[in-house]
Structures are given as C-alpha cells and as structure tokens.
Image (tube, rainbow, N blue to C red; front, side, top):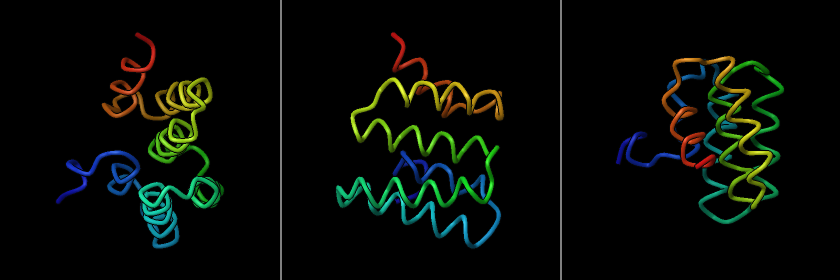
Length: 100
C-alpha cells in the first residue's frame, strides 16, 4: 500500500527532507492508527518545530486535530498550510470537505 492509498498524515512524507522530520511524521501517523492522540500531537509538534512553514506538516497537524475532534483548529491549520503551499491538493481537498 502506497502513501497515496494510505492518505492522512502519510501524505506529508514526500514533502519532508530530513530523517528527523520523516521519523516524526511516521510516528504521528502510527500513533493515529493506534488511537494514541497524545503521542500523535507530540510527534507532529516536534516535526513542526524543525520546519515551521512546511505546508505538509501543517496539514498533518490538521489531520491530528480532526482525529482529536477539533474541526475548527483543523480548518485553521489547513488554511495556514494553503498559504505556505498554495498548490497543495491535500489542503484544498480537506478545506473543501470541511467547509461545506
């Protein structure tokens, strides 16, 4: 199963470029799959601390916030991500789904 098929946080992987950030993205995705929301939040915060303006990491945090039930914060994160990655289909698709 590839990144595109898995969706969610896994979609951030093609947009990150250091081993540390890759590790945090994988940790975030794995934590979400296990239902460990606290660990998912920690992992994505650690990733963002390493690259604050990466649109994919902001989208990933949006996915975490959705999983935690915080739609408002998720929408704000996807909007912020779109500023940093205006061509991001992930951002556009999620915003369209969440703001219908």
